[in-house]
Length: 208
Image (cartoon, rainbow, N blue to C red; front, side, top):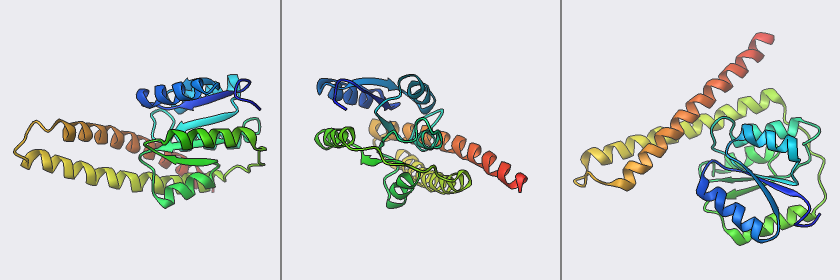
């Protein structure tokens, strides 16, 4: 492969990061396509079959964990390398889960662009490994653990920031207010994902 012949797909709901990565890769000669959630990412994969998928984890509609799982269970897309970029899922357990379900690389935000470009160049040049899909039931069970851990963290963050806003003399602390609004949106997304995972696991329980 070379930089100009294969598409790279970026899946990211943060438009600033999406534009930054798009511009960076395009400047280096790569052909880039983009999507803002995992569902649209899957459609782009079906149409363009990109050489590499670069995706955030925390996204609406279908998150990065769900996206990579669907890539790996489909024989036609199973071998596509997937690079996770994330600011939320950064623990050792998160990384281990990501790699266990088929993520190829794991990059923490803010993205070091030189290291990011080196990772892309390495994946473009290497042979595609034979990747086995992760067991469906094991995936949903471990996924639920990761989501619950993130939800617990978000609840603690929200409680801290709400306390700051009620006790701080500076009632116009815009940074805290912005962080709080973002955390509340993420908590809502996590609760929605957990509801979906519970439904999936209930299906397995009923089938036994």
